[in-house]
Length: 258
Image (cartoon, rainbow, N blue to C red):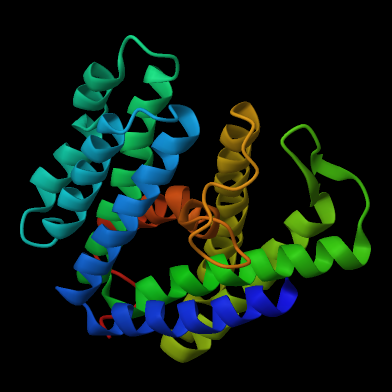
């Protein structure tokens, strides 16, 4: 299993980085495709056998990603209003509210990622991606090595407070490296914000874990060998990408325009 996970990661990471480097329209289309799969997996969890709301939320998420660069205001409106038609399509069945929530759960980060690549630049997007990867890796390593009190045993029994702190520490190291590469004067701010994003990343991870436990699902899907579904791999971006997009918008610029 570990070899399968490592092999899958060795394939996925370079592909993700190449798409990020290519920018629009390659990155936009890649995010739209991932969003479609995410929406399908979400719908399969909350309303098995009821496909139409999944198609609707997937279409909304993909549309938000594709038009995030040329029409950001309209794309954001699509992302925020997507739950309404999905709820109408899902009503009358158990999980209708969850199906509607899934629309914005997928569409908002899809919009945020594409918009970040354009407005914040490649450097900002890479910073986010490496923070998420470092948080996951650091959380796993520190959690396994140190153990100790559980973070949220009813939601994710394997997560520990040591893993949370280890993930935040690993993300802070990414902030240090970013500061030295881009702007040493921004070192304190980058360390603090990297640590904050790490905490948000783990909250985002726990959110998906809660949904899976709520509906009795171990993995969101089986499309990625050794990893489960796409939602399982990108859950850390669901909250961190919109948060960083908001920060970039308020700051009127990203870490670097490269």
